[in-house]
Structure formats: structure tokens, C-alpha cells
Length: 521
Image (cartoon, rainbow, N blue to C red):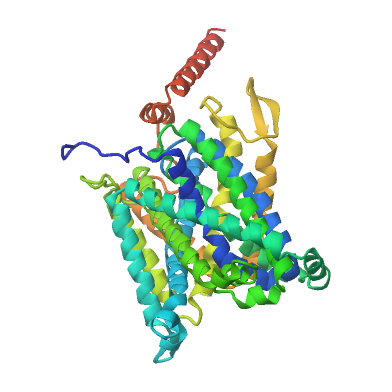
């Protein structure tokens, strides 16, 4: 049993399948919420919107694969940015991604409760919309739906405090069922309901305007948020240098295939207006139109949607808590957060506090006319901001930390000489930076709430960051001195990556030998 003074760390127990399902949990549910929203704006070009966003997502995924395998610690994009760009930009990346995670908790708990409410007319003869009330100047406030969503969040908080094994098991079981079901819907849809002439007709006659397409494609990136979860769990993953590349690459192409397949099939089965009208349950509407399975498609798709959305909210709780745990370790936020439960060895304080912020967002969203729309409007801002910084960090680390072993490297590299050493410059890093910057521009241009609430969140977090750093005597825009090489050795030892550890030590020894030789000359 750990003593009071012994520093407890996150235990490593996430397997290959568990790591894969953490990522799939975060992305698999997004198509249930995003398909109708994207269809509403991208219209006949919905499949193109998903494809373009998916190509950017592939580049993001490859960048995360390289960095998470090289630096298997909790923190994800925030840690990668810290290593590459320093304390201030590491904090900005952390704040941006934290916005996504807290919204993730609120948005997908609300959506999961919404799918559960599909069964209310059958069980109790009541429609959820009929339970909405007016409170003073606020109209259509659905307290019942809000209470259901809050109950789900409280359940997930308790689950995550209990530990990763229980939480990861939930993801694995429900995620496997969802993969099989989505595959069945796609296969039956293309075989028995898909009409290519309808797809072509909608492409030619129902193409959106530039502004509509920009709005729709920026929403489509919501369907490709999830690789951050794998990197967040890297510190708790067994043999991460082997596991992370396998799970990340597998997740990249699984999600890309599902997103493009659903959007392409939708336009060949139903008019885009039918999917857009059913913005609350687009997958159920699509499945209902497929022969043979349509008779049970509504209830089954509702049950499926509720479960996969629940594990996505669960992934949000996990990622938010572990991100803030990492930020406290690097003196971005108070040491009070840097505490692990003595029994369950989980970051229980960060789980409670930042899940509480998600609860606050959930409650406030229900005071607006459309809770789902309010939450979804901000969702893409944090991810795109964080991803831009990760791409820049990827490029920078190739030059500033060439000694760290990289079990996987982003493809398409150009070898250049830098300070007497050959460095592989990642071309995809530049292309990815331009691609995700374009999506961020679309978000700022077309998302009324996102372009205000997103920057406001970053500024609010910065004010706390500046206060905390000043009170501790740390530089606000500068860096706290850190021994990254010693930390990397410790990380590789904890991960039991002994081959990489030996490779790293040899690279450092060779560097010291060359420096000593140059000094003698």
C-alpha cells in the first residue's frame, strides 16, 4: 500500500483493443450527431464535405501516431505542443482541447439521453417535447431531458473515478456492438436501397453555395475527433510504442470509411432534405429506409445511438481529467489538481472539477432554444486550434529533438541538413497545417457562437494561467527549466520499452561524443 508521501502515478493497463476503442468511442458517436447537421448545410455535396474533412483527419491522425508513440505520456496534444513550442503554447493547446472535452461530456450525454427518449412514447405514451416548460423569459426548457443527461454524467464520473479498467471495458463492449451494427447498416444499405442515380441527381441539382459548404465541411470535422483520446491514454497503455501505431492507424481508416460510407449511402437512399429534417436521429431515419431491417431500424438505431453516444461522453470525462492531470504536473494549473486517488489511482479531483464544468455547460445549453445546436456550434473550435499547434510542434520536434526514438514516422519526408545532422522534414506536416487552418477559418467565418465563445474560453483560461504562474513566480510567456531527456528515459522505463530506451541512450551518447570531439578541435 502506498505511503502518504509516495507519489502515485497512473497505472498502465489499457490493452490494444482498449486503446482502439477509446479513440473509436470519441469518434464513432459523432456521425450520429453530425450527419444531419452536415446534410442541412452541405446538401448534395455532403459526401464531399466528409471526404475533405476526412483527408485532413488522416493527416492529423498520422501526426498524433508519431508523437504519441514517441512520447507516451498523458496530455496528448497539450504535451506535444509543450515539448515542441514551450510552456505558453502548450497551455493554449491544452485550453483549446479542454474546451472540446468539456463540451464532449455535455453534448454527447445530452444526445444519448435524446436517443433514450425515443422510447418514451412506447413505454409511457409521452413525447419528450411535450414535457418542455417556460421559466420566465425562457421558453421550451426541457427539465426532464436535462435531468436525464445530468444523471448520465454523474454515472460516468463515478465510473471514471473507479478506474480505467472498468471504464475501458464499457467502451470495448459497446464499441464492438456499434462497429458490427454500423457495418450491417452500410452493407444492407448499399446492397438493397442505394441508387447511384439519386446520388448523381442530388450532386448536380442540390449543390450548396460556397458559404453553405464551408459551414457544412467545418461541422464535418466534428466526425473526426478522437485520436486525442488514444494519446491521452498512452501513459496507461501497455507497450505504447507497439500499441499506439497499430490502434491509431486502424482507427484512422475505420472512421474515415464509416463517415464517407454513411454520407455517400445517405444521398443514394433518401433526399438530403429527409436526413436534414431528422437532425436529432439521422442514422435511425436512414436505417428505417433500408429494406429488410427497416421494420426494426427505428428502435434499434435509437438504442445503438444511445449506447455509442454514452461511451463518447465517457471518453470526454476520461480525456478532460487526464489532460488537466498532465497540465497540473507541468505547472500550468494548481498542484491541487495533481492528486491520484489512493485506492483507485485515478485523477479524481480533475474528474470532479472539469466534469463539473461540463455539467455547467449542459445546464446553460438547456436554457437556450436548442441545447444540441448551442453545444455543437462551439465543438470544432477547440479541436482545430489544438491541431494546428500539434502540427507545428511535430515539425519543430523533428529539429529540436531528433534523438527521441520514433517507432512510427509521418510519411513523405525530405532529408535536409540541420546543424551538421540529417533531419527528415515532414511535408505532410505543412499540408496538414494548411488544411486544418482552413477549417478553423471556416469555423470563425460561419459559426456565430463558436467565434465568440471559443476565444472567450481561451482568454478566461489564460487569465487563470497568468495569475497562477505569477503567484508561483513562474514566467508567463517563458519556460520553466525542465530536463526533458531525463523525463524521456523515465517514461520509456515505465512503459517497459527497453529497446527504445537503449536506442535513446545510444543516441544521446553519440551526441555527447560528437560534441566533445568538436570541443577538442
